[in-house]
Image (cartoon, rainbow, N blue to C red):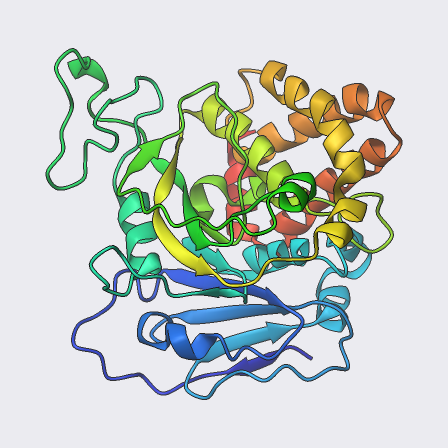
Length: 363
């Protein structure tokens, strides 16, 4: 049975931003001692912990946090046969947390990520910066050379069309990392000691029509705007590929955001990525993806969604059909993945009936 622990309200000087409108989703296989460092920033919020691996193992959570914990038995019980769409023995299982959340916003973080410091030595409140990113518009249709024009001290530069200055709603905020960079296995192997020490004080909108590699370890999104597209695919146990869960979600999400005129931001906030994973283990997980992505990326670059698709669910189903038809020729895995994409949407709508009612009302 899923574990739910309600913490007493911590004494904080003021009400944190979106305190009752945001969930923090954490996938893990270990005790969550890392939360102690995040306590000043995370304790006011509700946590959804998705335990991967052996469900008999007990995951310890520091006292004082308000959380729900789901293991594989809970996922199977809640979703029944549709649990097949949730990856096992892979951090892709985090997307189950997105599905069961009832909040408007989600922030997800890995358990090897700690609080970073800005150049002045001050602790970075990553969650607060993500919220600021999500609550201000994006500029996907025309690039502003001063980056985010809505930040304090910035604005639209000369020559920026006034008709586009209202911007678009921001669906996703993609943060970065100091210390261990998010490299693929071959790059890890040739640069084993490389560390990211550059702090770039910038937030920018990823332009419409441009894909990017989305990393899931420091990510926030508006669940009501784009939630059903944040499926991290079939990875890990029993699958021929791993470490492409967030990439897959990012490519699908970006195509749908472009279609629905939604924005995606990248840049601040930074966190401190503490641990480099084993490049040889990573290569075993990635090697098919490294070959496949040379076909996958052109597929997404050329994917078009029918105009009548006016909800995320409709867009995602349309995209799944194209995955089956075009990527299915590369490997049978993509046919299986396309089926899982459909199952994911069905499961999402079952657990989120109000959203499904809106979807049906638009049909």
